[in-house]
Image 1: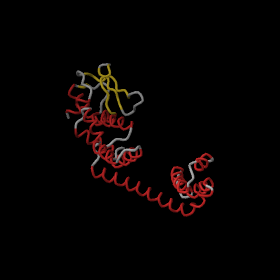
Image 2: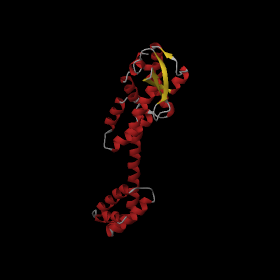
Image 3: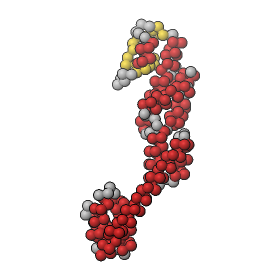
Image 4: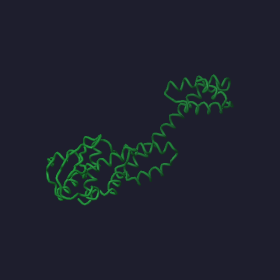
Length: 240
């Protein structure tokens, strides 16, 4: 358990426990005082399991054993702090804990614990990451490379990017379909009164769940085909 030893405070000299104090604002961590001085802190569960009491003598070897037993709890705390900034892929957390000096089995157990709580989910991470980056204009290849670099399994990356591409294709096909439908209903009106036609088109599309960006796209297409400009479209938008 060398990794646990590197991440733990160094044991003090043999000493008697003079107090066991819960850390300020933390009921899950206890500071152990030896010979009247704060020596190190442990998870409360480690203290309970070891049945530590004021007056007990703690030899260096026993201190070392306690600090090693505390390693999983320190790893969990560090991982949760890492996740508090933003969601992470499993490999990112493993790498961060390894660099912090935790033993491989502590790292594996910590990530498994996080996954059990639902705090780590590579598929969810990949879906959110892909949606965010593709919406920002990243290409699919770049998103794929970055997800793989973060350690997400290739199968998950491929399925995620493919699903997003399919969704986007569906959205494009849906907009094309509503444009064709709108053309049949409003083409003549755009040629005669584009402002009124835009207003009717907006009502027609909004009832079908389309937002203003989609409405404007269709209105711009029909106005262009009818020889009208952007004035009517913007006038209708300004009246909202």
